[in-house]
Image (cartoon, rainbow, N blue to C red):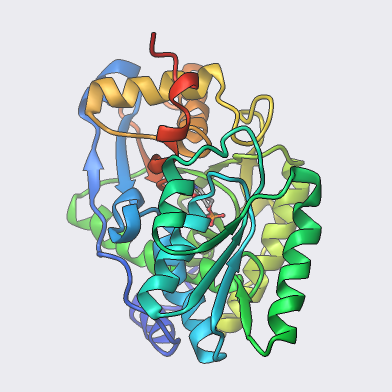
Length: 336
Ligand SMILES: *Cc1c(COP(=O)(O)O)cnc(C)c1O
């Protein structure tokens, strides 16, 4: 049962501050040569890698709502801390440049800290970049935040501050996708995506609020306990529902996600992700990335091969971006 109409949900989103960063709508495309190859369901792709700014990805859409909160709060420095090839670091740096804010990135000297891909672009966008040893990273970012505050700055940490607004952005994304599904006369059986938290939670929240029974299958890019992840998604969804003034109750079963396709670790290429990257490149002329979408597509492929989905069914894969990282993974992509 819907608890709100689409137009009313759109109106609630419209009351929130929002920046204009992304080129929308992103396309919803049929992958017929890839679908032929898997001899199973017909596969469509929602191209969130094509959000435009700074080589795109889901963070551009998320930042329209989240960084609007930083602007509302009068913050003057955007801070982010993650792996050396972080997409979010690239987008933090680019959006800070566009808004005339300072960007400080505390990365880490991990296995992909060469000046390539996202790290190269983060520096090009003018961020101040630090790459401490992995074990010093948490201390380094905390010290940086303290030093900024002591110097009279108002830093905004893009991983933690106003984080629920990133999921809110995908309530918007869900409305966009639903229109495209209808315009193309599709009857999707499930949506697949790489699931950190925000895209997944925003989509599920929107479908639940609108009474749309569309299964959302998340594939985790990092090692985690699937039921602990579901529990934390429930808390995030509840927070978003409150922001949108929606009377919704979430349960762990609302959040289906699998950490089984991560392999050795976050950011480490697996046989499955390598196969997925090659297949999409060679059958569709389309790029996936090694850390997120490659693994999510490997999960989808594994589920098709295990008989979860058959001919006559339709799946939509949400491409969340990340392709600049490919350039830092030249040696791991299996090209000899
Ligand atoms: C950050 C990221 C994700 C996870 O995003 P959420 O914000 O947690 O939804 C997935 N894919 C790519 C390419 C990313 O950069």
